[in-house]
Image: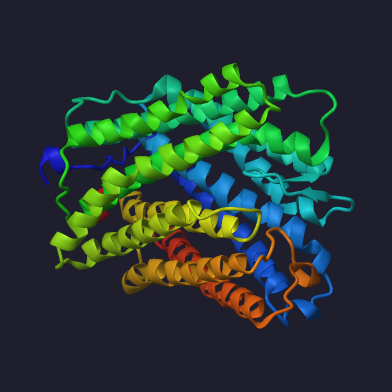
Length: 460
């Protein structure tokens, strides 16, 4: 592999490796919790099944924690893995403190739905439970994440030769850290601008609106880094040079710096503030990934043959590319507050998740934990993305017949065959997707709990 195509990071054999392992365990913990709550969610919205569930009122609380664990905690903890590998060697006490706060916060979030009087609020990007226990967990995780970003900003490794593949990859990771820092600033800015008269749903919706949109750029930048790394592992030759890749990543970072201008131009409560962030994500986030997506797609079409290890990377890469593209296209179809919105979100965020899962498979042997289910590694992304495709198709279908989002049971108004079939397809897809998510946990946990080997013995 020549330097001009080596989109990868070395795994250092010091405290940075242990930090990456710690964040990986937090990723596994988050997905374990999210998986449990996802089963409750699917059951509570599936026709005929939901009628026999006595705890249907638990739907919204389960939805809050499922979203926070499967998106917020999982994605940001995965960022912790890559940023740990990307930092300079030296003292890492701040990074360990960040990991400790994030782990405790995630555990508190996980148990918070089971306390009394935890009222759910379905605010976008970061839904919440109105209970001191949940807010304590969210604040602890936010503190841990903030310290992680601070540590990454202070101790990020030099990019190196800017026009090399590895230099472009490191720039992407550094750009994601900067994007995360801007998101934190936006959350604080929104809180400071919040009018005193706003409470409840309106308060949290505006509190997380700006920063939540910027976090989507953070997730997207991390996904692009994963695409580059997986392309290298799949043996692909991209139709773009590292210099062009650097420009693509820079454009993604540049979009992030539009957000302070929106805060300065329009107050928090104005329609323009809300609308401009929507446009920024729709045009900057979705279309900004298109050049690299096309380059990866051409690489996949050019190169058909692959070894076992290349097929492992290829499977996750092509499934991620497909789901993210489907989610982006659905985003341009949104015209109301129906289940087309979660269809768009599930497609896009699962595309990000699949890319991260693929890099987890690449990293585990290099961290000293060889994979023990080689064929399952290839099939897991296919099962997971296939289930999500059915799930998304069912939501888009149901959205066309006016089924509203964030409701369950009788509130869905499944009074026609078309609505029943659409939500039934959604339920089937959710079940298949849950199986795919469970397979990922099985693969990763079998590797992590197996006999550890020296990392240099399993380096591919």
